[in-house]
Image (cartoon, rainbow, N blue to C red; front, top):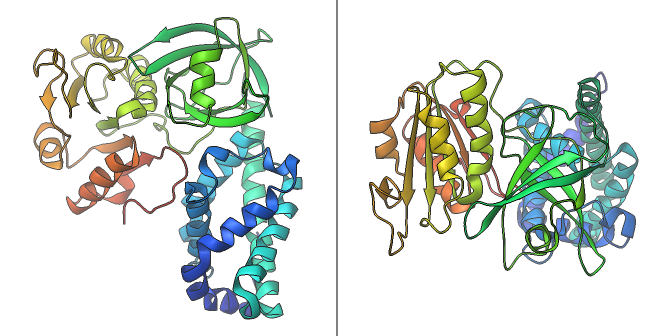
Length: 404
């Protein structure tokens, strides 16, 4: 982009860093409160992550602070821009939505900072916001153009029919989805997710992301969803209120966490709980497209009652000497026994990974709940694995820099 931020704007934004560190969550909370006064804009968001203490509030506060700290080194923000752009593709956020956010953000800064939000500060943040917005909009145009140019690609919401519904464990069910229009689908990258618009029985609409749990193909997607009894309706709707033949809407596959084309180095796929879903997608792709690639599928679950897709994973691995599957149960059930229902009791550890995988040369892919990532990602870094060989996906917004 030829346009650049003015030196005055860069200086003023950096001067606002202490205020953002002190009041960032309050600013983003106030911003969302203003945005959600407009029902159309409110409907663009995933409200499972909103509200008091909501992770989206922390995620946006962290993103704004990161932007301020790196305002004179925007190259450092590349991964954040990519992640946000993919989320915007998923939620079908369009260029015409950006002005609403600008107005709400600047008003929230003024509300929370009071007299400290001088006209010069507000002007600087206005310029900084639109500079970043233009970068995001440009990247989103590229992503949408790529999606629409590929076979089976589409833009916006498309209707899918549930072709099958399979219980994988006491808490996880798989749904095979085929386009209701009978057309082809775009081949996702193994590890990506779909974003759904789901009509709840009370008439409200919720939006949720679910990882695709099958390998790329032209005909169907599979998602494998954990029933969250205390959730806000997305998984409950899918589990309890859909059947074969039900229709749901989805945007195209998105996400910057995926297995690269033509992987060369050995891969270690680490997952906790239902975080195995993108790993199964990667494993299916490896088995079909890269049979000579060394791969280690290492999964942690509570016990056999919650462990999903184990038979499927082991069947995939049985056809190759290059694939290795190991499972850990942290709370084995009465009928569970190491060596029979699973391989090891306890948790996945760095020492075990160092001993049992090609640790020094592998690419590590991780997905799971935050405690799982907090335990393993920093441990991999401390063990000397370069950050560019550690790839991880969050459940929900990335409200903390887990690898710090």
